[in-house]
Amino acid sequence: MTNPNPAPLRVLALNVENYKRLTAVEIRPDGDVVLIGGRNAQGKTSILDAIYAVLKGGAAARETVQPIRDGQDTAVARLEIGDEHGTVAYVATRRWTKDDAGTLTVESSDHARFSSPQKLLDGMLGSITLDPLAFTRMDAKKQLATLIDALGDSLGFDPVKLDAERKGVYDRRTEVGRAVTRLEGQLGSYPAPDPTVPAEEVSAADLLATVEAVSRQNRAIDTAIETARQARADRERAADALVAAQNALTAATTRATETVAAARALGDRDDPQPFLDQLAELDKVNERVRQQRDRAALAEELSDRKREQAQHTLRLEEIDRQKADGIAAAKLPVPGLGFDADGVTLNGIPFSQASTAEQVRVSTALAMAGDPTIRVMRIDGGESLDSDSLAIVEQLAAEKSYQVWISRVDESRSVGFTIEDGTVVA
Image (cartoon, rainbow, N blue to C red; front, side, top):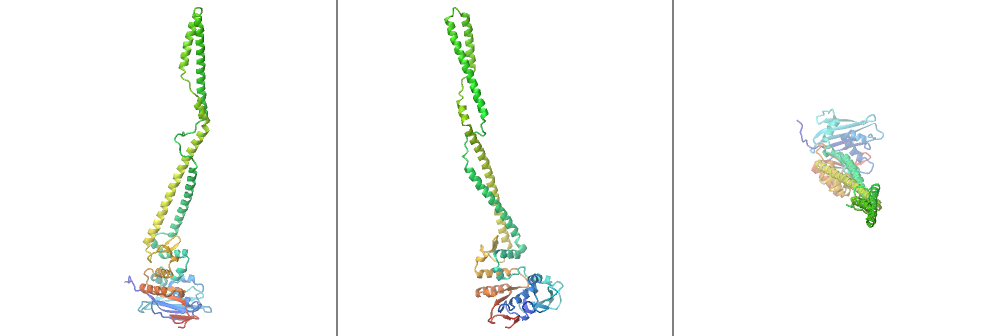
């Protein structure tokens, strides 16, 4: 039965021949931190690359243009992998010729060979394989991409797609906001609504027809009055000649009575002046009607744009909440570690603004995240680590049972293994 929690494994021995700058190297490390020192271009980084090439196979091959040392036809790198007590569990060997990209064999402690060696190693390696110092030197976008790739499915959402959607919503809300500002400015140029202004424009033809009707009625009244006046005059003249013209008086009286009645039936006189005054003001009134109607339409459009703007704001809040929930659920391996659209953050501030020691601590802890069986990590260019940063790496290596290989420029030959011209000299 397979042990569900196997003991952590590390490199117990490294043997390399003719790989990159190395001629023949044998290293049996001791302790959690393995320092590889020497001058530039002597093969320090080749030591780290050899370990990576054996363990990661195809991924390492894609990053290595020429694995075989100049002037040689073959190269080989061999790792003895075992526990901290020195018990060998596996021996992994990768060989290169000029005709292939490298072949891998993995044997157990009893010399049994595995049929799928790379699959075996991949199953024992962590998903996060990065150089902590290289991570601190990346730009913000590269750091973000590396972190997201390392988190994989644990993140629960695709930050790139979510950020793209957020940008789209934000841009649309910005456009709507500009429309809101424009509409508010236009609305301010209109006079305030006036309840006395009619809902529809007044027709000049209708108003003129009303004036004409009133004028006709007034002319009829004037005619009737004049006729009545004349009838009364006739009656008076007829009265003077009553004896001589009784018949004429009777007829005139009858006619006068009938005419007065007809005049009274026409009603009182109307004054056309108010209608004439209204006609004079017609253009102004209709202009106000149009303004009020346009203002109402503008106010309705403004209301629609504000409602759309509010909807975009709500969606932005939903996206931010979704991202925050996803980050919280991802259980990032380092407390305070997070990210936004601009890059990785630490305790809410850009990662680049953290102190060097904090960056080293976080990057190293991130590289050590997970619970792999083979716990080997590399740091290239370790001369940039000061004593405090190196102490942080040593502390984390001890806590996480990791073996950390560090290359650094050092000519003193007093620390770790010194490489000169592709061999170990001290």
